[in-house]
Image (cartoon, rainbow, N blue to C red; front, side, top):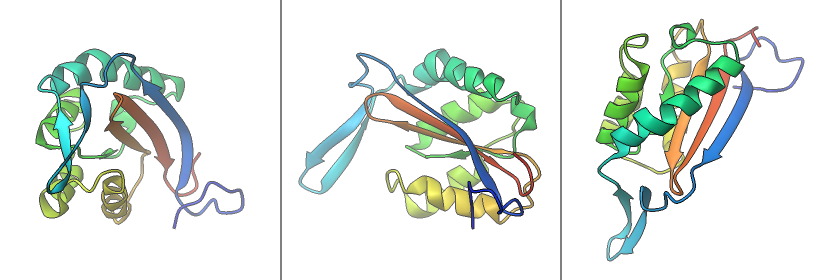
Length: 155
C-alpha cells in the first residue's frame, strides 16, 4: 500500500511529480494501428534524445528535490523497449548499476503501455527500500513524466 496522505507515515509516500512535452517530437514515439492492434513506433535516435533532452530534464528535477542519482533506489521506469532501457541505463550509470527490475518486467510481460510501470513498482516495493524511487515514463508526444516515491517514514 502507498499513500500521499498524512497519518500514513509508516507507508511509502508519493512526493514531487513533473511532466514535460517537447515541441515538434511527435515522430519520436507514437502508435500505429494495424491489423494486430496497436504497434509502438519508436524513432531510432531515442538514446540520443535521452542523453540530449531527457537527461537535463531529469537532472533538473532531481536537483530541485535535493537528490543526486546516487541517493536513489533502483528507478522504476516504464520500459518502452530494449533501446529505451539501454538509454536510461546509460543515463543512470555509473551511480546506478542498472535497472534490472524494469528489464525483467519487460522480458516477462512485454510492453503493456502505461500500466507496465505499476508492475515494476510492485517488484521494487518488495525490496528493502531505504532511498527514494524515481519513477520515469517516456511517451508519445514526446513526453516525459517523473515522480518520486519516498521510503516509509520519509518525505
